[in-house]
Length: 345
Image (cartoon, rainbow, N blue to C red; front, side, top):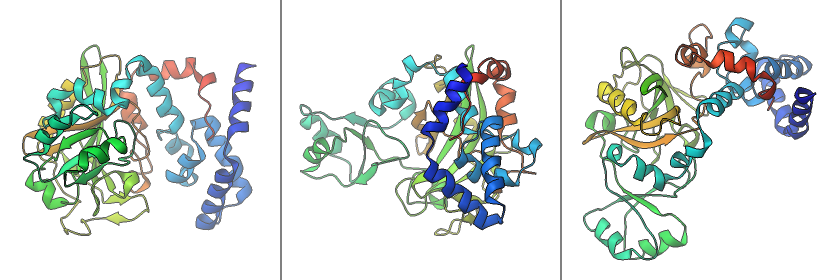
């Protein structure tokens, strides 16, 4: 009864406009029957906890049953987060001011939370800086993060816009600057911490494209890193589906690019992963600065959209097996909670 009730609620709340838009998009691309796609999306929602956006993004319509079982879908990703991340402690990741305070030793740059009473402190902060990074203390996808040249009106403007976190600009190492100088290019590293041991599950390079941020959803591009060789084996991909074997502006090759300081990155995130043991499953964004690898932010709800994009899969195999190797308990927990994680949108 409970399972039927939950499924009914999901069906009622589903965004049908977007659902049928996805069906039409795939139909035009593949000429597959709309009726077939309708029922196949529902099937994948029930069988693999794939929302219709997952179905389109990961091109599940082109995958067989064996391949589909390897896709880390939104429902399964949500389940991992619900299982391993204690909500009582996730505020340290949701609020950038709290994050910087908690992980200060890993930030490796100057930063300041402004308020109406510390204008003198702010003026001292900007005295020797031509540019600063300004951020809201919450938000995702790099929204409203800007690089600005501070002036006499900056303090007042930031308070009015509720942009309270200011940071020293990260000066990235020459190798990353040569790849793309428009933004800091970060390494998204997914870790799992259990019993004081932090393990890297997978890692991705995010590259900016003529914008101040490198976020995939903000105009940047992404490509997986082979954590064993530390090299890039695939072309990068942006959200529009464009592939890049070299950066379009700098012409620096992407395929074959070796991530500098990877051993130091691993040391950084394995130590950071122990700080809040109640939050076990984290996505870290790491920059390679002149002071060494440093944390840009941590994500207690790391998205799954960049992990297994079709051009980055070998033989259609997704990333879920890599997660299963580390999250050894998940299969039992998945069976126990199967009634609670049906996901169709």
